[in-house]
Amino acid sequence: MMKKTSKYYKKVISQLEDLYQNSKDMAKDGSKVWRDDMEALQVAMDIIEDYEKMSEQVSRLVNKYEVGKLLVKRNTGIYSCPECGSLIKKTNRNHCYNCGQRILWLKKKDVKVVKGNLR
Image (cartoon, rainbow, N blue to C red):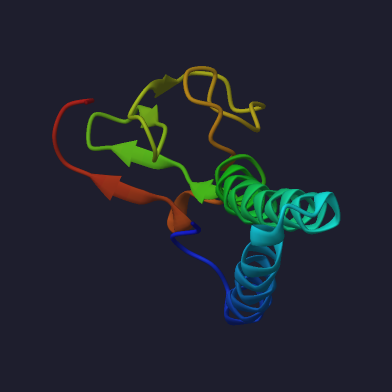
């Protein structure tokens, strides 16, 4: 079933799995009602699993595109993206043109200087 869930969803899934098993036991008599219940329970568990996956993906996307990272200043005096290392030429960019990472432009004293070449 689900691999990684929050504690609350784990509890809900556990209860739904118990209900599913009970319905499966009852469906042995051939009753369509119990088979319909089993199908509805499986759909509910799938919806919760999809929601958990979507929530994780949204969190990753927000961290990448909405939470800014400090721009990296190389010892050669050029700036690069903190995520992918691409050269950033324009000081009015809010996001890296290559990877989409949100970048923060701060005063020169706040920019981290890194020795070495671009990635």
